Length: 319
Image (cartoon, rainbow, N blue to C red):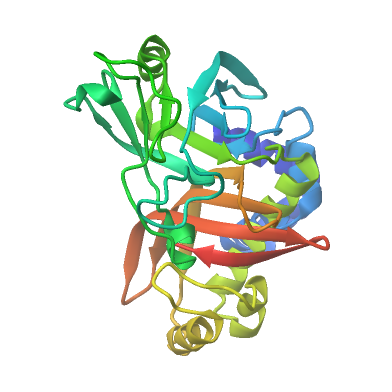
């Protein structure tokens, strides 16, 4: 159904007769290329998003959004509807004792960023309440910044002792509210955004830019156009494994020199504002990638960490 709607929307900006003529003269592949080109246009996405609330991001497969604000010691749970967000819960929390963004194991800081839930723990010490939801900290961007540590949870309060004022870096909420969150969400379809002091907000203009950017980047990648492809990356780009911009460029030059035909498909695109302690305007893109060449194939998750600056987008890291 979504594919049909997308197809119909594209037809509003491209003359039907032109597509028919293109199909008649050059075949279905030429029509597909024309439609793919439409997806690189910001104007298409602006029209697509015109009735959609994207204040907290754009989500195709994530259905639940938790927003934790460390300065206010508050968490909100939203259900992502087709064109809006439905507030399901709002409550106070406690966070790490030390102020600032987590950098290393034992620094008593709660991280700042966007994370998924990787598992649910029910056999936990009574200190953590009835259960704990494990976050994906450190994510690939954290690793590119050499951050470390582990075990950042959303958990409850002690069952048999008094509530404490701080955690060691986790986010803790009263047990009834934690159990309510657990009952309301689907863990694999949830995102938690943790901010320090900044307001978490997105805009249609920025989301439209990012969606068109993704398809422009994909086309340069598919065409093995190294000069165009590398322009999408920041000079300060760094991967989770430590590979920097120059190393990454050399690596891609070797891959592109094979000049293999590529098939690249993205689906379940999720774009969220990315809270950070770098004073950057950032977004995280999380999507499914289906990549195939004659010699290699990959099906799995793709992450991009983007910076918006001076009306331009650059990739800071990817995973």
